[in-house]
Length: 312
Image: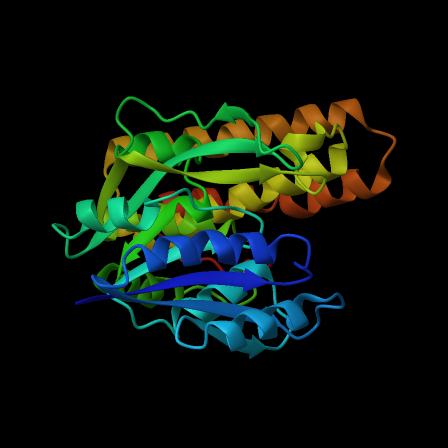
């Protein structure tokens, strides 16, 4: 019997965590004769809403299926790494607390990934309305979704669409542990994991399934925010993620992969310049931009294969 973990991070998540858990439980009950599944909820003790009470209620009702792991306050990327290190299942599913699994998602994913001992599986994403659950749009998946050149330019893999075989997870964690701890809070964790998996594991696009990604006020894609500072911060996180990947994998990147990486970096610097052009009145934005312009030096040194002592 296969074992699996579904990892959910919980921080001020009272509004959605119950629905997320229910969507996973429905999947697990459909597989109870086939797999030994456990939901690992990593609860941030700094949450100041009713999240903990909801988790306690669920864990008491389903003690064999839900295990709550409490931890000190940390960033979302740090929390995910913390959870992954504590998961032991042969298959590790990731789910954000405000997203949902459709019926049979876990079954379909395992059916495909069972043939890949170091598999990194991902699906397409359906973006749904927060209230009505109406599908608003679908994620744009390239013609060749497992081509690393595509994902070096843009991330089309969301956290909740990911399932990783345990052997692959160990490889990814070993790589991530080599990064300076000060960088981890600023990376895009889903993108960094996907980038590393495309090099260290076997990427597998699972076309038969999908996940629901909830669009609500907290998401830039839902609000259509034109706040230059927020967009610039997002672009800078993209840059840091690409640089972190380059630092870890530079000796394994081909010439064409380096070129795709450079294109991804240049696109984001271009977008930062556009953001600043729209909002030059923001002294803070201007300061942040020039604070991070030093990243250009890191790019040059990484491409030349040299170490850098630049401190973020």
